[in-house]
Amino acid sequence: MRHQRVVKKFGRSTAHRAMLMRSLVTNLILAESIRTTLPKAKQARKDADKIVTIAKKGDLAARRLAASRILQPKAVQKLFDKVAPAMADRKGGYTRIVKLGTRKGDGAEMCVLQWTYVGGDAKPAAAAPETDVKEVK
Image 1 (cartoon, rainbow, N blue to C red):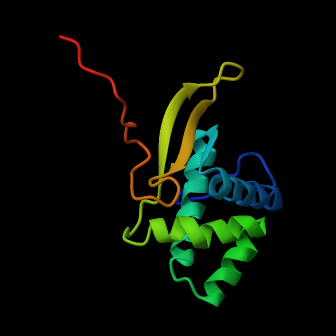
Image 2 (cartoon, rainbow, N blue to C red):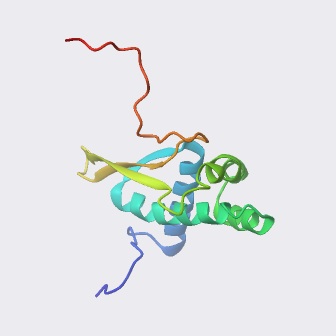
Image 3 (cartoon, rainbow, N blue to C red):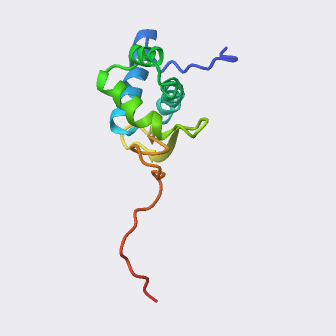
């Protein structure tokens, strides 16, 4: 029985699962938005929120800890230079999951995992871009 078990196994070994989550978080930092299955996104969101909390400290120990959990040095740099300062005033909820529907091949539920604030600006990612469309009556 799986009473009080939090970690999803995804049919992978422990090392493979850990590398999958590290890869998803690294790609989320670099691309600012990733498309994956819903269970993987839910698990990666936990890791991404924890790494942002570490990065918000901003000291050398936090940078070394983040570098041990992220695969690429340029992702660590982007995390500390752009993502963490954008999330400085938030106490949590750094990512959002937007459901896309099911995948045609196997019926897996797909979603987009993205930061709540994309880039380094203070605008939410879901805000519609301003356009010069005039209202027609």
